[in-house]
Image 1 (cartoon, rainbow, N blue to C red):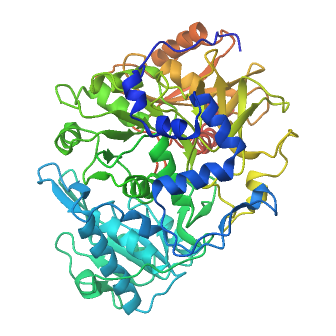
Image 2: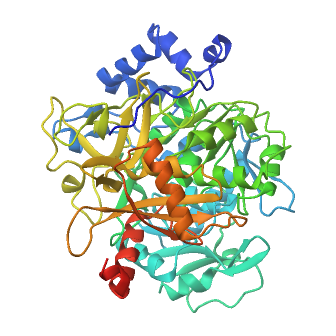
Image 3: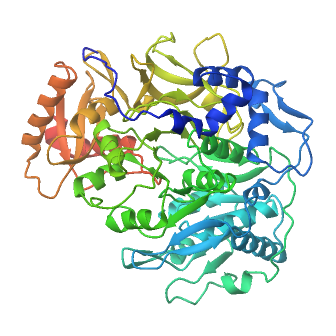
Length: 621
């Protein structure tokens, strides 16, 4: 590419006192290592010892000790952790004092803040586990949760895990067909749901969606006025056991605790099981890279249908911290007031949400001074949005955090012991390493990121795909085994990394490879633009790929598609490459997104090509 690559402008720099208070500094001191770089190097050259230290520091409860911490005798693809141990990871979520606050919850913008103690959450999850056992459910049974992330949903989640069951995570926003697909893939035996959803003062049906999905037996929580249940379904008050004592069922480390799903934009979603050890990765990333302490309050607008929901449970509770849950949408000022009232110290976001806050100016004047750090994940961020976010809390750092469901957390991230530059990553995650390879399979400062396994948290199987084919087959030859993940990164002159989106979203324009994220990063800040998505389409008659940009405009913008195309084309030529020709701009009201808020560019390509088939003008162009 002809555009220049430069290091980002200065962001946030930790003081010596701030560094000394971190878990990373304590770990360095324990190991006698003088720098973060030395710690990361040690963590990937002594992987078993690294995870043994983390298990000790997190206080992970083992009902039976392990014989071997890491066994790679069958290769790194099938690495086995805690061999010989028996554990139930839910037991490690209740190590804080019973009277410590586990959850702060505000159901709606005008509701009072609820405080749930660790003892309250523990007892309710025990009542759920006893209720399931009384209904004949046993260890290994798959039980779905189709409801928003409330304290009760968290207790249900942990109750299923305590029983030895497998949580099937399904976003409450899904249509019946999507719910049905996931229930079938997981061979689900029961479903927890609620009658309605409350969103911005509106009541939306949920139980009826579950019925339309032809779900198995449902256990239904009352929200709203609906009380008539389908034959065989069970009301919450009839299900819930009065017995608040339950001994978590010991399980094999490889036994599943949770089945989560990819977005499924090109067919049935990948079904990814989390084992009993995957949550240790969640907690370790929270402990090290997000520096979560018992006094912290962690908020992350999320859902149990996205991996950040379970991640939040484990990263907060295993670290003995408080999670803050908000029951309404996080896009307006009422969420900002909740962050202020709850005293949030770590706030997780997705970049598109931050952009909404910036364009609406809805968070001005709030006091977010208790926030120590932000974390951003889910999609590529823009420096402008992240700089705005930092300023909301009096210039606090943003931990860019990139990973996936099949990792159990992040593989490239930031820390609180290194400078934080907007929209960049400072390091591979501790306990992991990565390499960037170009299209010819050679090491490069711009290329596809490959993970160097093993690591606790990395998946070893998929329910409905060939795991080897998805992650390990047909990889470039390299000096160590690699694992595919599918992200494109560039390494900046200062050694930091900038995300360039998915490899699948990389396009070839005029013989030059460029990512959708690079184009979007140039167009997003332009006046009148709320959101953009860039795609490349191959003309039916053949020829070079054509660049198409979908745009969502602000309400006040008065731009025609032709005027917007001229504006975009000028910006692309000035900031990226004069050879990049913009074929078309499509103005839409919104962009299609997954449950985790990622833009579905593949769906946009499908929609565009379908529209082209129906349009004579496009067929003749």
